[in-house]
Image (cartoon, rainbow, N blue to C red; front, top):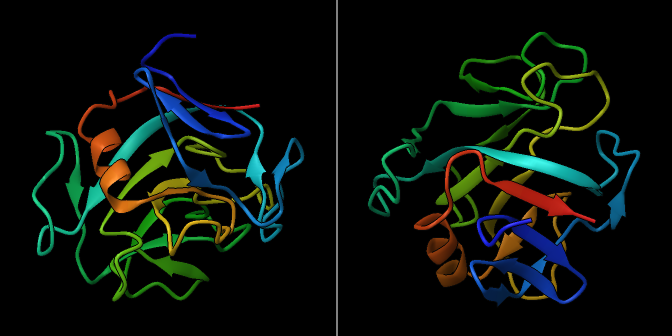
Length: 164
């Protein structure tokens, strides 16, 4: 492990010598993650993407990509686009990346079940803003807005999110 790793602990996420309060999936941490279980997957997951709302915030890193109204994330298990960024119109089940609330104004994408997704194994494990402290996610790791922005400004492409 190195200080560049993001390490999830029972008391928060350690990164670059700091600890950040965070929330995880309502299903806890699971080694056998499945689509819809609400769990955060156990393991070492690379940060391989960052998206942001250019109409709300400035680009946090040179490798961050702006999202627009047609950007979606497929959670249609078994579809060729399962657990991938897709664009509307898209008939399969999906999550809207550009939301009315601020949860996805900035988010980091892990390589959980990506790029070669296995049907039913789970999709879209992001690091994003929380609704509020203590409110669990559907499997993602979520933070206070200021903490997420601090992390995003410093995290390297390919850094590891370690979930034990």
